[in-house]
Image (cartoon, rainbow, N blue to C red):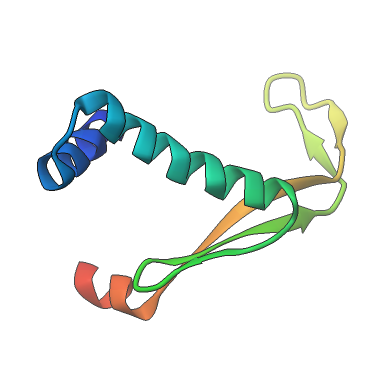
Length: 90
């Protein structure tokens, strides 16, 4: 399933125009991204929790040359599935 399929599903339920359905999906995605940028969590009941994790700086190796490179510390998105989602997928 991709974004367009989600837009089609929202449009089928809410009606209106597809543009309005796409705006609704974009608003949800943008809200999640903006909240994560602030370093806060997004919890969606029955789906899971989106959060930001700090990844420490580390040394890595270029597989082609074998050269050691430094990878800087960075923030990465993290998702923890809710129990209901895990049970539904089983």
